[in-house]
Amino acid sequence: MSGPHTRRGSALLLAIFFLIALFFLARAFQVLIPQEMRAALRMATDTQAGLTADAGVQETLAWVESELSNGREIPNETVRYDTVGEWSWIVKVDPDAQSPPNGTNMLRVYTITSVASLRGRKMRQVTAMVAQLSFSRFAWFQDTRPIGFFLTEDSFDGPVHINDTVAIGVARGFFNGPPPA
Image (cartoon, rainbow, N blue to C red):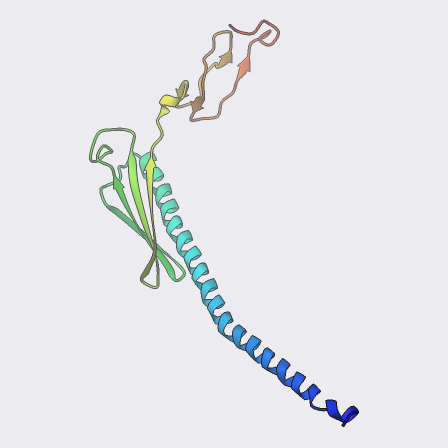
């Protein structure tokens, strides 16, 4: 038997094949999409935990700078905390053995440990070692603006630090003469 009636079932078989292929493709997406959603949620939670812990360190560092600039020392095992939405952070500040109140070194070093929590569950811990910079790296350091600061042939080499605004005057002929030796 030949003719148009011999190929009748081929369209049905082809439709069934594509239906089965689409079923398996849909089933694969049904399994993968929830996994991808959970991975994205974990990544967002990890990012928020890191940002919350870092916020605790940054806020505590600003507080330490404020306390020291007002002449107050940071006691041993100082604890600070705050809440941001559902997140919270707890920070512990420890001066090292040489920093006041433990020692007499004026260059203070602190260990700041921040723990970020989500609804009471600890999610991330960040530890930062913070050290005060020494002014010995400056060729000239002055607390307030100097009076009569002029560029002359006498010079110094290195960075300058002034805790105020500075006005610099140049003597007449300074730029016209030979360079300083």
